[in-house]
Image (cartoon, rainbow, N blue to C red; front, side):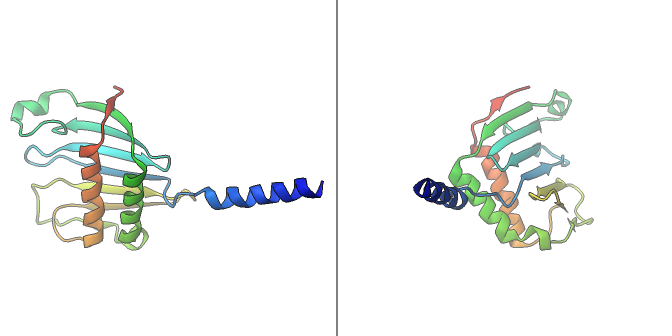
Length: 161
């Protein structure tokens, strides 16, 4: 009995050290339209590395025309982020210090660029939303949002709708 209890305690310690709770329940990045042919989309990544892309326009093509705006949205896609890519995303989110950032980095003088929104949901249910446009913002925040856009481009997406 003593050995059984020791084994159970040891296994409990191992499971506590090997299980990792994510610092972020969900990371969402939404990019709105511009006065040109900018990609318009929303990407959501959860703590299990599942990704959903809600693609509106110009996500899978280069260039465009005014007629493309009247076409139906591109669709909803899903994928799984690789472990290394997800870890880099978490590292960049940590480096950005999202909880300490302002809620808005909108430059009202820049009218033709996309407006973007970064939403972070934490395990305790609290949320942080940061609205942005072209213009000045912390370099760490720019690195994070640029990386999310890079991830969107490199992931193999499976269309679900």
